[in-house]
Length: 561
Image (cartoon, rainbow, N blue to C red; front, side, top):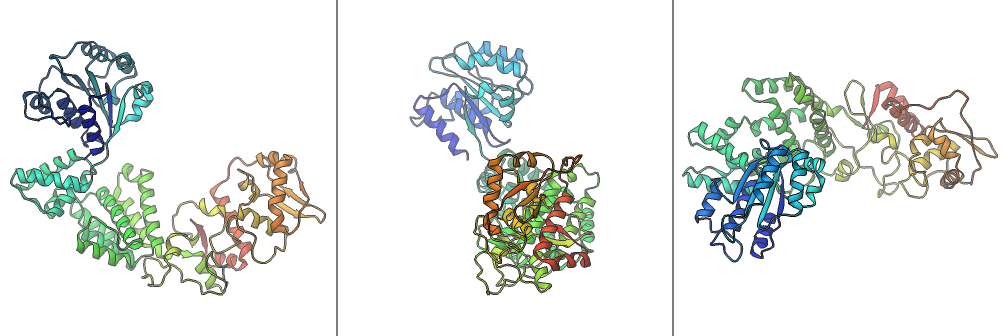
């Protein structure tokens, strides 16, 4: 635990190369203050080993480790001693020599980010020119606040970043504590506590003490879940079955049961995100090493077979969106938010892949990269309501998520990504490749192919060029951009030359370009709306596959990401 820090400090003590100021950064409960005390013990221990280890049993070590009064080691809580007067008092005390020859004065300042800017300024001089045998250790969970309040301080300190403690290390420590208390516990119960602690050893010990207090010394998986309010895995397995089978109405029954049993829906949501992530990992890498019991691993792996990888990604995205915008935390009724999320997940089987729709209409999309012409097209990815076949190509579901169409009644994220071009396998060649397929019949089609390829498109102008009108007037090609930056930049001969050179391979000839100014009184649009992006993308798709427009109108479909 924190070996990268403890080993460096031990070698510094052994080699008499200790710095005058340290900054310990990291999450709460990962050992910052503890390691600062160990450093103070090592510096002042009369029985220190040549390797820099304190004995831990002498009077000095005992007093420092126990946090008792010591003349040479002072712990200060910056949250309650944060003013400039407190900093000046600390500076004056630091000028006095240690109590005995060969000892160090160590000042441990906890929650250092709470110090005011004026307090840091008062300490800056003593950090620049420290008295001999005086060491400062600043511990903080928010180093960025020190950067904002007193950036020069950071260059005067040796910084160590503490990591979150791994689940296995926490379990080992909890096992040691329980053996000392003569209260053994199964490893799976301790793993639940370790995962709940989220990398904090102090939190793990506090949770263990809470479990021991409320259960009278009985530590097992059910008791831990009951005390911590965690939802059992069987509930998540039940939910996965509901989603896979499309039993939308059972969502309400499941949530109602959780509330009747006293579970916190916010805690259920966090557990759901972990479960979806686990199922996706098992779907993508069946042999991946996971911190799960073997029976749970098999159960989750079986459920993973009922979902396409792309659908699991969309499920995680929908859940992450709920947390990112803070809706769940702000809502006075999280029940509705959780029910709506689960219903969205259960209706993902209504999503239609664009390639699947075109094949259903009798069209044959262009062969994707690596699939030679004439080779059979891979089967479409399936929704949560259907099991994916064993021969389904993994790359189709994971490496190239399809641009889809879905019924308008569903809520979905705005398709900014889809606005940049058609879905893989629908239109022209890959970015950077030579123009392929039949030669363009119109200048507009060549213009569209050029923009999709991205070759030679001036930086920052792709969005404007997509809404630019192009006309073939025989002896020259007329381009009419919208008012604004595009019109100004196309007035630059170098930019216009790049456009001509980029368009030439797709048009089959070197065109003479003439820029037409917009009509008088026309104004540049202030912003491009999501609706306009969707409309422009659909227009581009209609030009590639005319039958798609009829399908969108008859089936009332809308573009989604």
